[in-house]
Structures are given as C-alpha cells and as structure tokens.
Amino acid sequence: MLSLFLQDIWKVLLYSLVLGAGLPVLYAVGVRASAFGTAGTDGAETVASDASSAVRRRRALGRTMAGLCFLVVLGGIAVGLAAIVASGHGEQLSFEHGYPTFVPKS
Amino acid sequence: MSAQLLTLVLVVIVALGFDFTNGFHDTGNSMATTIATGALKPKTAVALAAVLNLVGAFLSVAVALTVTNAVVSIQGSDGAPDPALTADHGSALLLIILAGLVGGIVWNLTTWLFGLPSSSSHALFGGLIGATIAGIGWGGVHWTGDGTKLDGVVGKVILPAFASPVIAAVVSMVGTWLIFRVTRALGEGLNNGGFRWGQIGTGSLMALAHGTNDAQKTMGVITLSLIAYGSWTDTSSIPLWVKVSCAVAIALGTYLGGWRIIRTMGKGITEIEARQGTAAQGSAAAVILASSQLGFALSTTHVATGSILGSGLGKPGARVRWAVAGRMAVAWFITLPMAALVGAATWEIGDAVNGGLVGALVMVAILVAVSCFMYARSRRNPITAENVNDDWEGPSAVLEPSETVAA
Image (cartoon, rainbow over all chains, first blue to last red; front, side, top):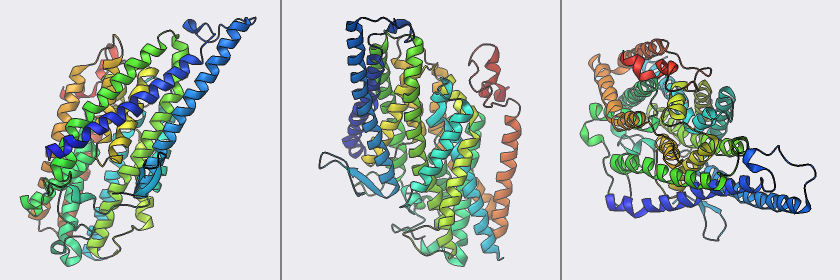
C-alpha cells in the first residue's frame, strides 16, 4: 500500500510544482513586465508624460511580454476548468495527443 | 406516512444539513486569503464562492453512488446497498447512515466553534466508519482494499492526509519565494493591484472544484438511502431533486461563510499579502486538480491550509504561527476517530431505544441539541464579516476562538 502510494505521489508533487508554482511565477513575471518603463518602485502612477522614445519602447516590450505571460496563465486556468468539468462528467483529461482531450475515467 | 418513510425523510434532511456544514466549513479553502488581503470584500468573496459552488454542483453530471465504498462496506461495487441491510425498507442501513451523518455534523460544528479548518470528508467518513462499527462490527470497515490500488481508510484517507499538506506547502513555498524575487522591485500598490486578479482567479477555481467534488458526496449518500428504502432503483443516475437540493444546501452554507475558520486561515497561520495569496491559491488549485487527475483523493482543506503555511515559509522575513498550525494538525489527526466515536455513540443510543423511527428521532434530537449548544457557545465571541480581518494578536486577540472557549 505504502509503495503503491509513493509510486505515484511524487508525480503529484512534480505536476503541482510545474503548474502550481510555475504559473503563478509566470503571472508575477507578467505583473513585473507590465511595469517596465514606469517608475515601478513607487507605483505605476508616476509616469513622466514626455517620456523618451527609449522609455516608450521599453514600455511596449513590457506590455507584450506581460500579455504573453497572462495568455499562458489563462491557458493554464482553462485546462484547470476543463479538468473540473471532466471530473463532473465522470471523465478525465488525457494528454496523449499533446493537447487535452476528454476520456472516460480509468 | 409510514415509520420507514419518516426515517428516510429524517436521513435526507440531516444529509442536507451535513452538506450545509460542508459548505461553510470550506468557504475558507477558496476565499480565506482573498478576504485577508482585501482583494474582495468579505461578503463579495463568500457570494462568489457560493455561486461557483452551486455551478460546480450542477456540473456533477456523473455522480458516483459508491462514495461510502472508500471506507465501509454497506453497499456493493455497483452502488446498490448491501442486501443484508435492506430488509424492512432499509431500516438498518438508514440508521447507520443517519448516525454517521450526525457524527460528521457534530465534529464539523465542533471544529468550526474552535475556528479550526478540518476536513469535512474526513468527518463524514469518520462518522460512517463509527456507525458501521457499531451497527455491523469491525468487519464492515474497509481498511486497505485488495492491494492492487489505493483504497480503504489507509489508502484514501490516512496516507493522503499525511502527504497533502506537505506537498501543498512545498509548492506554495517555492512559488512564493520566486514571486517575491521577481517582483521585489515593484511598489506595494503595484503588487497588490497586479495580484488582485491572480487571487480572484485562483480562488474561483478552488470554489468551483469544491462544488463539483463535495456536493457529490451528499448526493451519493442521499441516493443510497433512497435505494435502500426502495423509492429509487437506478444505480447509474440520481433524482433531479437530490441534485438541486444538495447544490442549494452547499451554496447556502458557503454563503453563510464560516467566518471563524476563514479568520484562522487568513489571519491566524501567517500574515498574508496579495502575492502570497496568489501563490497559495495557485498551489492549492494545482495540487487538488493534479491529484484528482492522478487518482488521489486529497482533502481540499489540508491542501489549502498547507498552501497558506507554505506562503508564510516562502516569504522572506515572514513569521508562521506554529502554535496555530500545530493545533490545526492535531484537529486533522483526530477528526476521523472523533467523528467515528460520535457516529458510533449515536448509533448505540438509537439502537438502545429499539432503533426504527424512535431511534432515528432520538438521533436527530441529539443532533439538534448539540447544534443549538454549539451555536449558543459561538455567540459569546461572534466572528462575522465585520471582524474577520481584525488583528490576530493585540487588543482584539480576545477574538481568537480557542482562548475564549477554553476560559
């Protein structure tokens, strides 16, 4: 029983680390990036109105990076939602095709 | 109305009562950190959690009727009740289930009074185990399964209870530490604003998963009782009214908000800010979903509290109140045996008055008396949406439930 348990529990830890720590950190990277080019240390409000083009470029880069991060995080949440819906229907997600599909619970 | 039908009605009402306690006992799992950091106002947060629990419960299209099979053998693998217990409109089975539910509710209310987040599933399983031992004997308990898969009390309850808080704490600690590294250059305003949505999103995911998982358990128990009585025969579906009433009961419970437990989780374990809240909830949601995907039954409560603890360990310079965490750990370990004790005692008392309808009425009377006592006790130091976020230590420390109760 114990070996059966230990056999699989490390997988829970691994998946959870990737998704449960990875995605929030990616979200944090997004929050950080969205503050590029602003006086981030004391809040977003103190942006000079006559910002130089270098600052503007940094800000655009930051926004793009932030958008990408948030997109991946949203994708993760969508997979989470799919897993919940699947469990309600007596099914589970399968990643055998690389993307999640519904299969009957094993 | 016959005596057996009245017994069935009592079982259904008490089961919905358990579902209701399941709701408010677990509101904190999804919303404690969101409330503690002010990402949502307390009332807004519990309303959101309630709606998502309702939606989650209705998402339960395929409800397993075999919920009790994890720990006791009062039904077959197809969900049909054990034929030995179904004589006389399932009277024997109904009394076991009723006593088990009383055990679960009493223990849920006790831990709520002390503001301790303990697992509602463990309370339900504990109650059923106790009632089964009293009603059938030790042989009725499903301790380990046949060894080919994780099953029984050991595989589905005890081992996960040890592992889940540790895993959740590790994941949350790593997440918190990294998030603080990434965002240390940002000001407080930017961090709180930026992570507000992170908290709301992850908390919502938890609430939805809770509705899908936990409401099902009561649906399964009620349907099992209906089959035992003989008013329902289909083991592959459940009556619509069962689904609707369970969904509403858990949502109403969630909306009530177990403020005493929310306070312990959000303020007691460690002081939380928005970034930790996001890390803790993200970790909890991932551990719950990953484990159910891999076939583990982890308790949402253990995972959520482990995650909050981890967010205190991961934040540079933060302090974890180990005394609070220790008291919680004790509550976790005694939940199953204590609920079992109450379930067994309830069954014995019901049996001593000759069982049947009289026995059921006595059991319900005990439940009502104990519940009223707990409620009256809780009014001595009420915790509400208004004072849930008060400082844990200092002048308002009198709010700490365990101190006043012990006095």
